[in-house]
Image (cartoon, rainbow, N blue to C red; front, side):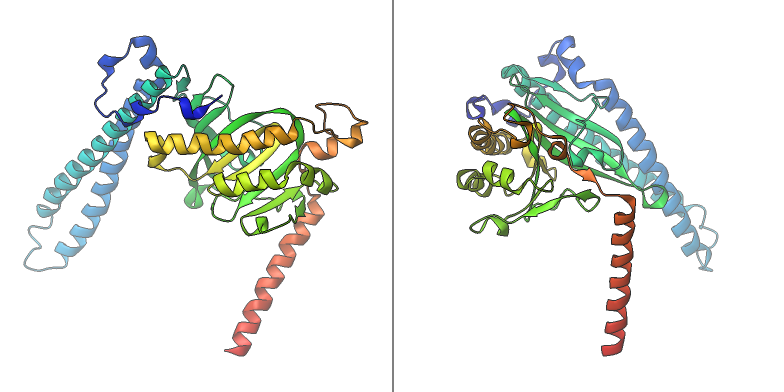
Length: 339
């Protein structure tokens, strides 16, 4: 599929309204869900503002002899102002989000793509990135005729006060056949798929490629990685893919990066799709003839040891944690001894 020939103009159209679409088309973006999200956001922010401002201003005025009688009159005035500002800000953001969804929907319709905001879509299983955290969901998903996918993805880590929700954009593209599990962490992209829990082999490649990416492969798959990551492929990664982390698993290529509002503009979407597509094109050419020698020359099959990174045994993970703790204690001791 030639992504450079898509019609991207709709992504910059800010004048679209629901009247420009049929009910069937609007069902793709689940407008009722966004209305519920908007209402919940207004309630949460308003209540938070009321509690914080009431507490702060009550303390301030109750400690002042002159303003003591007004202590319960002045805070509500501020509360009303804060609540109105919160509603305005969230309302503006909601309208912006709604307009953006309509623009993406028009882009999908113009190019015969499928677009949905249904968060019930299950993220792919297998890639390391989609095994992190819980409450994993795709917020926006574009599916292309060649089964490629571009999506905004969220997941949650920790719990209680440490609970945090993270977002990332990812794109998946099909490869001509299955390849060994490879991971390329870009040194410019702060996503960095974690590998410390897995048995992996760090691959050193020729030239200055190691300045841009850190490459991991299953143990004993060093030669296979070199067979796939040829100079032409490495050049494509450097030229088009420095903003992404890449993962090859099965017969798919995945690209990850931090989300940006610019992505959903015409220029941003064109850059994202064509950039990853250029990398995928080079990999397709190189993997079209790949065969895992461990399978006696069979096509489109990878040996179990190379299909996916294996999780380290529990004792190895415990040893790594102990070594990290000891290192931290040693550094703390040396710092105190020297200074």
